View 1 (cartoon, rainbow, N blue to C red):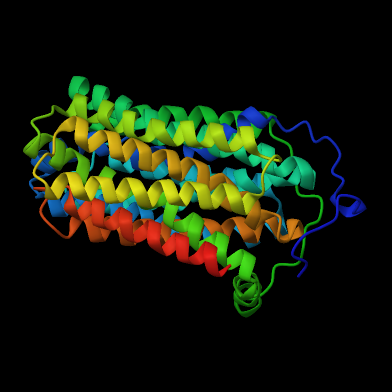
View 2 (cartoon, rainbow, N blue to C red):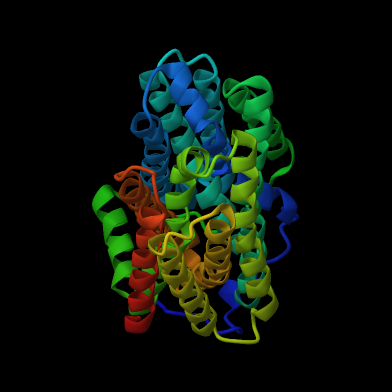
Length: 399
């Protein structure tokens, strides 16, 4: 498998596809909306369904598990049958899960609905990234993927704030009503306007061949470095998002609506970092950009841990280092995606699947680690973020 293609490789000259980049960005962003928009409503939903904090937090873990496992399937399927039909099927499953969650009478039904949502939504993540790569030359891929990641960071930035306002005004179930309308409209746009972008459909391999393809990617040091680093950075903040409603409300006295805006401030740092990544794309090496982001992450996690241990934890001293950490994530993530997708552009679907699986697997682990302890301090979050930064740094150094 080639690690890179030269700019003159004729197989990488892609004609214009008339596939709207704005629509592809919207598709990809939608993949994690259901994860983030429900965060401010966790405490309210737990009280309504008669469960505790640990119980309702499993809705986050289940969603991440579904996103991780499902993405391994959508890449090979879209490489074989085309991006468009597979994406339409995923959006239909996503919508069905949202409709099931609206009347959910207990935690068990809600967990089933959340799994359906995640298994459908992960098609948006995999196929959105792959379609952007389909319509881009090698030189243009890093720039467009940086734009994509920049836009994707708006999802965890805006979704919690929207979820907080909606749940406080209309109840937690209204969050899923709103999202169902959004997904239905997006699905209609995909059906009516989005063309097929996969020019080189391949035969669908057996499970062994699929696993062998993933293993070939993992064996390449560059791929392995960007997979681990991107996986650690991209979803490590989920550890904070899962704990935020309880830490901010119970420890720091914030309201659900204020929690949404606090999360917005934190994740807006990812937007700033991704904008920076977009600006420097092509001017510095991908590896240099990724390492700079990682250094910022580690320093910020250390600062948060020091604040918590010194007894100076307030809303401000919590949000500021988390914002800085998010800047590092926003700088590291698009560079990791671009680096991985350029290893073999002809297997963009499979590479996107593997990246998504790695990212969400780490996210589930980080969320489980942070929520295993009572949300009475920021130490579990800070420790989780520091571990993520150190693992990412080691991967980039070895790769």
